[in-house]
Length: 454
Ligand code: ASP
Ligand code: MG
Image (cartoon, rainbow, N blue to C red):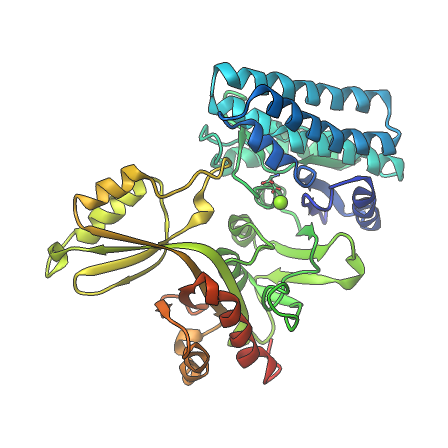
């Protein structure tokens, strides 16, 4: 069976009209048997607000009201069956109960169950939209199959168990039905609800596709694919028809908003091709991300990631010594911090933090505790308001003559750090956030607009 998993992001299921466009996309491809939805746009943010300790009763009521309005609006326009009205009513009641429970018990398990409610609503509603246009659809609770560990807020999927559970509980439906399920949500071995971290729905879709040995994963969002750079930065950004898994993974890691960085992993493992397109304008086509691509160019895209923090660690212990880096990285690992870029000198090591590791509540990564611990071994300097500009492509490290083109553009700027050589697919520079858009626009002009590459 040639099977497609389609995922619709928050803006694609933001309201009834948006859901209708998505439904036409599903109806047009009978191979689309599994649909993964995000919460309607804004709902997860409201739920995150509800989990905060600082809100008072009035604020809580206002937040719950805002969530109810989004869901009830869709429900009303849908002219839904009694069952659907009651199912949504139950989820909305649950939001009320869970947010009240949090006042007494600030349990992470309760927070995750609360956060899952947005996806629960949109899956129930979207299944109904599909039914109304004649698709034999059913809402399916992903917690039956998406097994994770119990790290609430950023749970780790248990791949083998997911594969077994999917075979047992999900696959049998697909012979006759199109299943609509929740992104971002999982359950641990005790059946407690977990979440995969903000933006985790793409990951959910890829995990299910992996377990189902799907032919493709479609990520339907509000842009017509992946661009050579962020179109909000320069009008000259161009949509890419095709990119490789390696390039896409680098792009996602280095700031392209289209994909959750981890999304690509389950797809890579199984060599499942991923499509990214706009649910509002499916006719524009989109980008295919594949294992093998034709004629990979040296430079494919420029990615930008703002809000970077640079840690500079200085220690004379580093001089002709062993184990200093091991020590530093052990400390970072204990604080669950992963590192993006790293450069070293005789007595310094500079590194940038990977902010994609933050949990569902978006808690800051660089804690006082960590800084104190590091300070025991070295002098720590922290610099923020930096941005990472990454040139993504192929054979970058082994192609001669590239540096001149790149450094010509960088000449007027203060480059805080450069990383090149580890991967054939990227060349990264760290610049001030204020310069970032200019640097991206000029690099794009120099590398893509002059010679008509990409
Ligand atoms: N609704 C979740 C979020 O806003 C997951 C997702 O949309 O991917 O982070
Ligand atoms: Mg999203």
